[in-house]
Image (cartoon, rainbow, N blue to C red; front, side, top):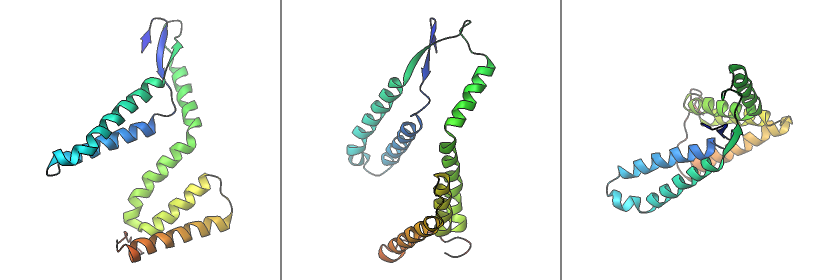
Length: 166
C-alpha cells in the first residue's frame, strides 16, 4: 500500500504459523458452536479465540514496515520476479517440508501409518542433513515400534493399515 513516497510492506518471514493458528482456532470455534449446549462449550474457547485474533492482528501490524517506493511509485515486473525468486531460494527447505507433509498425509491411508511415517521421517532427516545410515534406519524404526505399541497395544487405538497390511 502506497502512502506518499513510502509504501507499507509486510515482512516476508513469520506469517505462516500465526495464520495457520488463526484458521485452526476459528475452525475449532465454529465446531464448538455446532455442539449441543454451545453456551457451555464456548465458555473457554470464546476468550481464547478473542485473544488469538488480537495477538495475530498485533503480530501482523508489528511486521509491517515502511520502505521508500520507486521513482514512479511502482516496481517493475523484473524486480517483482527477482523478489519472488529470492523468497523461494530463502525458503526452499520450508517449502520442501510443506510439500513433504502434503504428500505424507494422503499416503497414510494408502500405505499405512507405519510405512508412510517411516518414509516421511527418513525424507525429513535427509532434508535436514542427516547422512548417518544408522540414524536414518534406527531412529524411525525405534520411534515407529514405540508408536505402534502405544496406539495398538496399550491404548487400543487402531492405526491406519495400508495396502501392505501394516
